[in-house]
Image (spheres, rainbow over the protein chains, first blue to last red):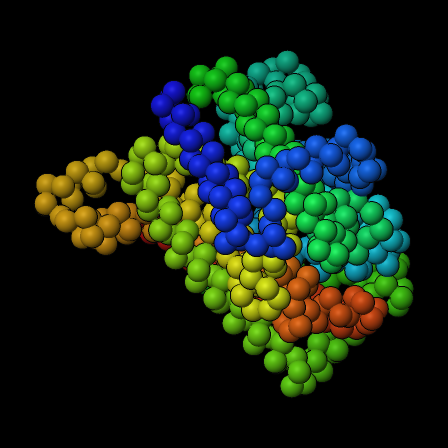
Length: 250
Length: 248
């Protein structure tokens, strides 16, 4: 395990170093990409000066709202679908093909319906995230052992109580798998929508900087988004591992 | 026969349900926001008879085909390497998972700066969406092959290429196909996004100009076509996928 971690760090460090070298020698020219150390320094400057704080805050807030909505609605929908087999079977083809459909194509429609504010962006993030939560939660609910369900029956739990105290806790690791993907999807939704049409946010700032060849703003923001998504994802993965290890499956 | 009826029933109920929901939403939102299903289908049929549409469609399809070919080739290459070489796999797989989780849409300015506006950027943007899922599914597929199959191959003294061709690949094919299915959708989305942001041709561009001009008819028609196309192909792939998994 130790040796693997060392190699992993070495490879990533090597890749960054290679990029740095290519930039410094000039094989990758300045207009295309800044050397990595400059990107990190510019990011520090942006964060300490606070010039883009409102944009960063807007994007992260919207992504969090979209994620929260996707989780709540997704888990609730999965519990309902799990109880009503016929409804689930009808919707199955929709879930199976859902991610093949470019959801962004609905963005203009949502702008007209909800106005050019935060709402259509949150809606896009929500729509991208919710189905992956539903599918993974259903997958977890399918695996609840019969003995647990029978115990709930013997305790005369009502359906909602059973869902909250027995079914969902058992399905938690699977719900987390869905949540991890939903984090990425909600960020993609918000940032993509900001790219296409918006009045603020990180996606907007990136595309504005791109149009003005302002690499000193663009690359640090890209780096920040990558860091945020990798950090959240890593934290959720760790939690998932702890949950599985407690159950002796890790 | 009853099986066919049964397997068609759910999708049919779903399609009717979606059309009803669409019509209801139209009554609620009105002409400014969208068109009714019937009007959209009529406009789409009209659009299909124009020459310009086919120019855009063929451009999109060429970009998508190239992106998919690259995604499959690189995805399989990485997948077979990391799946067969245990140590490389242990070192690099978590990195791949982390890369899979980043919003690749943020990388689009980088792709544009590296490849320039036009075809190569679209292809690259589509391909980076598809490579990683195909690689990850291939790694898992190879790791879950029953050891007895590999032992049988060794006993028969198969050379590495023979081993891959006649043991590993056939055994892993159902899972690899699932990866291909996921990679297919993601590559399609990636290519379209590339067209939306940076292109002068293609369906994504058509959609983006329609948004800019607030041409509701065209927005609805292109969205409708994309959804029908994606859903149709995805259904076919899903059927093949299920067949491959149940064959064994």
